[in-house]
Image 1 (cartoon, rainbow over the protein chains, first blue to last red):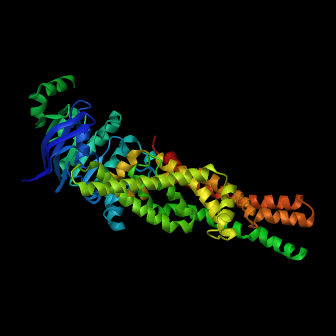
Image 2: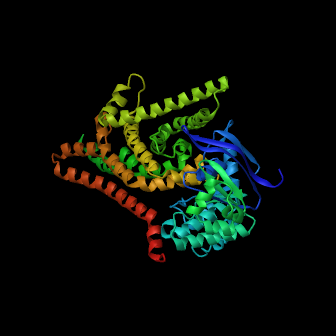
Image 3: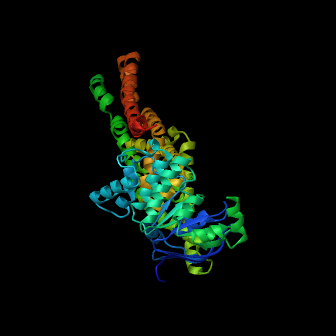
Length: 247
Length: 287
């Protein structure tokens, strides 16, 4: 077991007859930042969603943050909740709650899921907002924030639960280059800390600079898994070579 | 017998039983519907995407207390059965006993859904006047309702059916991603519904709700057909009494207006308040 915080074994997933994930085996150690790259439709997002139970799978097992998901015995609602409280998720489209302010967005889950005291969650909420560079915007509504700001609030919202693992599904794909920079800076900062992160991304520069390992997904398979230099310079698989050549 | 009527008139006009019912209670009740929504998690289960039985019943909670207890129990029951149903779909087809239990639960849920659907369509699809007749005169041999109870029940059931659709649509209008975001934070369906979906749905539902409430206020005049002496009925009595329709008629109209207009204003203000923060923020937002 050592310090593996995520272990995935022969994970398979079908959409009807189409096989989305064709048997994924992977392991993530505590504190690692994994950049998941690869062509669209390769199963990257689906894989990420399997990790926190947002998507069910058809065979295999996922062990994550001390919990175990199995295809044969779907988890009940309470254990899924417990899992998600430990595994944060950031979406491509931010999905902030529009009726709440930035700070309320961040504090909602600590307050209602972890039942923290107002002082605790308020203080941490403010600290997190400052950490993502949005101190002073506590009372702003999502509508009044730029895309980059919204995504940073969304990251803070996920972090507010103090997750053991943070999953980010194309966090910068809906943003223009400048906003992308803001968000990537926050992620870089997180990666330097002790956070365990899995980032589905198309930002190869970011992946090379920040990730401990790069995974290349193609057609439902994990075709490369190694340190950035190795994967980018000397990809072993034909598919990965083609992908990097194109990118 | 002129005097008693005369004496009664002002009190009937201003404080007749039904006016009290409609005017002072309707709004707070409706709003409290949202407070009671914890029992409506099925909406959450389907991400509010589908016309579903639970939400339809949800709206009723706010409208008639008499129905609340029964519906609450029903909703609980449905939560359990829907949970089982979700499980049923995913469970391997091995365990025969479990499977039959789950299948039964799923069937039950279908039943509830069907019942809610039937209720809504029946009450929306038939004249409220007819419903009042049936409740008061039609049910008389079995259950003897007082005229006022029948009036409240009839209007309540009728409008609840409309409200149910308003709320269902409002919840359905919220993107499924909101549900997902709530779930990803570890919230239960119930919490997601209460903290994320309903506050947003309320904004969408508010204008239609206001419409229905004003309409309900005016439709209260229909209950005179089952012997309830309400505002309009009292007006006709007075009109016959004083042998003039103009003044009582205008007074009566003014009274309806005096009740519905503030209602509209309050709703408009509430609506403005719900959206206000954003527009203010927008003005102050950096370019």
